[in-house]
Amino acid sequence: MLTTPPLRGTPPCKATVCTHLWHDFCYISDDEISKDFAMPEMQQERDGRRFFAGNFGDARLKKTGALLHEQMVIKQKVCLRQLGENRAGEVRFGRFFANDQVSVEKLVEGVCEGINLRSAGRHVLAIEDTSEVNYQKHAKRVSGLGTVGNGSDLGFFIHPLLVVDANVGDCLGLAHMKLWQRTQGKAANYKSLPIEKKESWRWIETFQLGKKRLSSAQKITLVADREADIYEMWDRLPDERTHLLIRACRDRALVTADGRTLFDWIGAQTVQGSYWIDLPATHERSAHKALIHVRFGAVSIKKPSHCSDRNASAHVSLNVIEAVEDASTVVGKEERICWRLLTTHAVTNLEEARQCIEWYCMRWTIEQAFRTIKSQGLNLESSLIEEASRLEKLAVMATSAAVQVMQLTLAREGKTLRPATDVFTAAEIEVLHHIQPTLEGKQRSKESPCARHACLGRLDDCPLGRLEGIRQRTETRSHHDAPWLAGILFNSSGMGSGSRNFDRKQ
Image 1 (tube, one colour):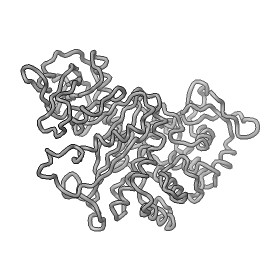
Image 2 (cartoon, helix red, strand yellow):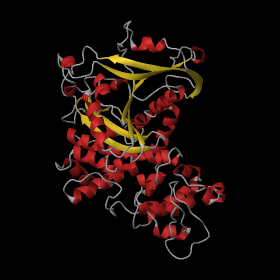
Image 3 (cartoon, one colour):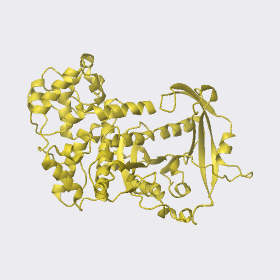
């Protein structure tokens, strides 16, 4: 491990450590922190090395996009007036979204930058899901929008592909993102249309495009909820390094002599293992210990009669896992847990079955991202932008900002082992080396630096008075680099509430 040298002179006796993230230690005094590492005004901009929104053929647009992305992460808002901090900033960001050179496609390419490098050599979970962005409360002034799920409210849909490390659960970033508007109802012959002309094509298209950005990954497992249980997915996507893990939606016909269906067949299998889990409380379920019974087996799924792909295989071979709660542990009249998972992974024993169940549980990461984008974070649906294409561009940047906020939250709470370079530049990491000791409690300062890596999560253990002192120092003086750290360190509203909900749902 390389040791980061002191910035100047002989190190004072007080030692500092960085934020958790595989960097060694350097030393600096509190006086030097207050003198050299204070926060700037927004106008003192960086070149956007960490906050990269895309290349648009214009250096000014690139710089503005990077600054806008940065402000979203700091403030965890999408209001251009608040992000711009003054009239000139608001106009600048508004013109950025209005510029034809700034397209959704270029923004998606920009926010997915670097995901291949972060995924290199890893087994990654590519988690995809859909969420609607509802602007009905702004219907009188917003133009160009289609309808959302209920068929009447105005809005559009986002469908990101979020990448998570399969072994440790680290959130690595976005690999792709699709946005669309529903401007007309289903055609009368909808079921007979090829999947390429259906909305459900997004599940295949998004993964195929995202997979191109994951060429360095050792293995990819697509994880999705019941809406992705589409026969064409099972037939087209698996290969030697690509697996699928999807919750079963349909009680499919099996290739069996007695014509049995999927749910009937797996329910009749012998329980091959049981284990206890602690279920947290949700709005639908009380907190309790649950006894989970696991069944699994290999099945052959018949091609559905309504499948419009004439070239699709007559059947596909999969493994099915059923995890169901024992009736004796269900509380009152609450619904018991019952998951039926289909996968192309080998499932020959209880350990492999439980591994697939754990991977499916990581799908909740994308639900947390949606909450950070909307009600419990950036509040995308509150935007006052009035034109549909500009709202879509805003949604791309808000999704990327929400993922970075979520990465910081998980790091702060010690739930990730990702390196700091996922979120911070080298200069910002250097600043964190010097700020960290002023935020640590007495017990932390007594620990041996060699025995630990400081974590963003430990900032919460610091007395509030000391946090306020750092806030004042960093907000009242100018600084040569890393202008956004104070916003991340001290904006607890979005980062705190989101992570607590993550714990409850898990």
